Amino acid sequence: MSHFAIGDIQGCARSLQALLRRLPEDARLFFCGDLINRGPRSLETLDTLMALGDRARCLLGNHDLHFLATALGVRGQGRLDTLDELLVAGRLPEYVDWLRQQSMALFLPQLPAAAAAGAFRDHLLVHAGVLPQWSAAQTLSLGQEIESALRSPGWRTLVRYMYGNEPACWSEDLLGIERQRLIINALTRSRFVFADGSLELDCALGPDKAPPGTVPWFDHPRRRSRGTRIVFGHWSQLGLVVNDALVSLDTGCVWGGPLTAVELETGQVIQVPNLDR
Ligand SMILES: [Mn+2]
Image (tube, rainbow, N blue to C red):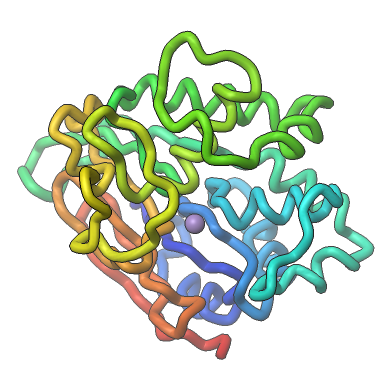
């Protein structure tokens, strides 16, 4: 049984359905977040993902969290948002509750590795990235802190206060909403980090346009998760990367690019063109 990771769908349901037809029926599917918003068919996208049941696991991206905040009424829609159809749906509470059950980080231990016959690799899946100070195991545990909070009766408080760019630097001593906000920002918004490991959250350009003093999060020289292959989306300006250390999956489907799946065992890339424009 093979494992496929799939990049940012952002409401491109027809592209998603075409991609699903290209994947083996018994494959396990891992969606790397930003399932909805900006594209034209967010409701149909969630219906399609929910119908996959146990075949699929989904990560939450910044757009999925933004939808939760918008559904709660603590955030308004931005100019480019396309959440109306979901927000007026009779099943809105069902969509909200389903998203609250999805993941912030996933760990797949000991998959067969393509690079060396007979070798195995651990995989960590996140929407955007990890902080240099975090090991893979710690990232998983911090993700679970957020998952527990999202599933708890206090989830509205988390969603209400999760916005903001501070604190930018990790400390084991962080507590409460400041700790949660930094974990959420790192997992769902990372692109560049400073030498001290703090997050730069303003620049959405490509990795060759790093703001002064920063590097892409995966290039930080003391990144503690280096022994684990990291699978992520979010960074369409980075685009498709498949190597032994990284799998970058956001190929900008919502902007007219392809939707991408990568088989983690082999590195095989399966793409469909955008069918939602
Ligand atoms: Mn994103």
